[in-house]
Length: 267
Image (cartoon, rainbow, N blue to C red):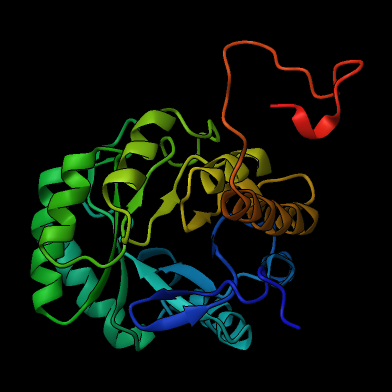
């Protein structure tokens, strides 16, 4: 018999996956630790950055071979781009080099907190989709921006939990929950700001479909152990969402029967 959790696959642009964790390939202390951490996480999708990890560069050749040896689905990103033109150009280069039309779209609007530019992101997404890309847009937790990205053809959305690399978790759970409620059929992935497994559990309990993270594992004191912690956290959060948590109450309610009253009469 197949358990509910084992059967709980999800689909992104026509491809099915068992793991709901997407993991980055940067900032690890060593390439070996990167490979071992990714393997321990059981993630099936890896993000790669062309500007930092180009297989054409001499220093990137070894990295590229190690990435390929993991036999994972690649999700190139446009990290570091500030304009629509930059993002589209880098996307086209990534498609040729990494041999995939999947793309994590990042267009930075502010270098202080790496907040994505909402207007440029929507414009770039529209252009890239017309060019045949399967776009995973990194955006803020703004409902209207998410709706506009959906309207131009994005089939997956990736709102942030908090700014990249901060590890602050979900700054605005209300916004994220609203996006989930208003876009019930859209695959949603929390991208950026996840620092602890508890943050991932919280996002999954809100009904999000997956988590994308990098720094939380790569810069942990023990990356491999942290990767397994996140693996288990996503499973726990997803199970909690499927199980249906009890409603919160303003007042206390006894969990044991009142003396003299059968338990089946308790409310």
